[in-house]
Image 1 (cartoon, protein in one colour):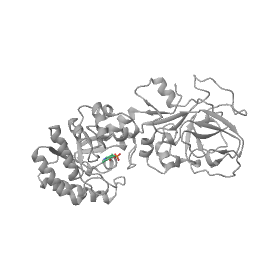
Image 2 (cartoon, protein in one colour; image 1 turned 135 degrees about the vertical axis):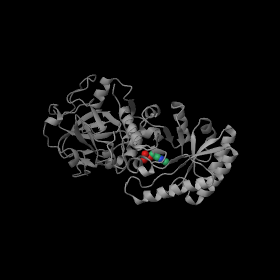
Image 3 (spheres, helix red, strand yellow; image 1 turned 120 degrees about the vertical axis):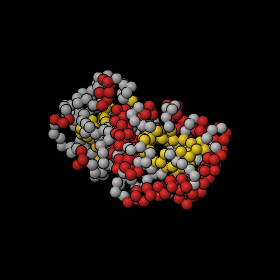
Image 4 (cartoon, helix red, strand yellow; image 1 turned 135 degrees about the horizontal axis):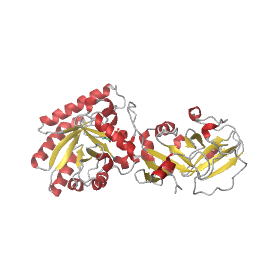
Length: 428
Ligand SMILES: *Cc1c(COP(=O)(O)O)cnc(C)c1O
């Protein structure tokens, strides 16, 4: 029974995207599964079965979770504080990225305790000024790594960098950073190291800059259908739906929500959906967003609340129990994650990782085909079967007819994409 907001993860879409990246890389493919697979949940076996060679995450805690799901896959953790549990990571065969001499000392000490060599990827900052070793410390880091390697506590298997500007395929900054990376690898070799795995590209560079592929690409966003380079058609995997909890008929001039930032311009029906910014719907999309019901878009009106949003559904007879699509792949005209990102002034990444813990997750592999079909396509008329029709909640509404077949006084779609601000402030 669909009684709450639901997030459906389309495993076939992720499998498709993974295979696409695996075919487009010259080297191996690392599936970046950080932040719970960018909010998509547990995916290790799926991506490994579809062409991923490696798994990658930021923290050791995330790596330990993945290790349980994928006992044999090469696995890298690249962002950890000095006091992280390196010993557990080494025992679990987790490769570690190292960005400083201090961190290297902690990793080497943990390796001694674990009585086995830590597999290390030295991480060079090629231009972000964010993570990785600053260029001025690189030679010394390589020198120290050679000493620890000679002593047997580490094995430097790789060198990694991360590009700052790859989302613009023509950025000259990428050329500059690639040269810095190549130079860093040369310095490492001159210091007596032999890193076998060089990795620099993430999603965007993997798609648009083959000269950055080296032995391994670290791909996150692309697996989830987000193309930061906007050059290929990937398949988004998430569909977020929510049931209409209640509807109310209101006269013209009714203020809606906190501060009455929206006022109805004619008599209309307002439908309530039980999810809000506490569930990851960005509050900055207030006044801009749409949801889809019966294959038609309706504006979300007023400020988003933590737990609920209000949709102006006009005179179409929308009933409690009908399911609204908040976003989906866009194949049936529903809003997409990209549109939500636009409405909120942010990235698609931000929307997909933000879906809150209260939202019920449904893996499309685990639900019966019939349920998948009814969840994916809102029914054009009437109520979903199991819900008894309640009494009409206000003045009679027009009969429910397929939305696409009728003309309406309510503009829909992109011509309504601008924020609608308070007009006449008639509060009730
Ligand atoms: C998140 C991350 C990636 C993946 O980047 P996408 O653009 O999502 O493919 C790769 N490398 C590092 C270091 C990251 O933090």
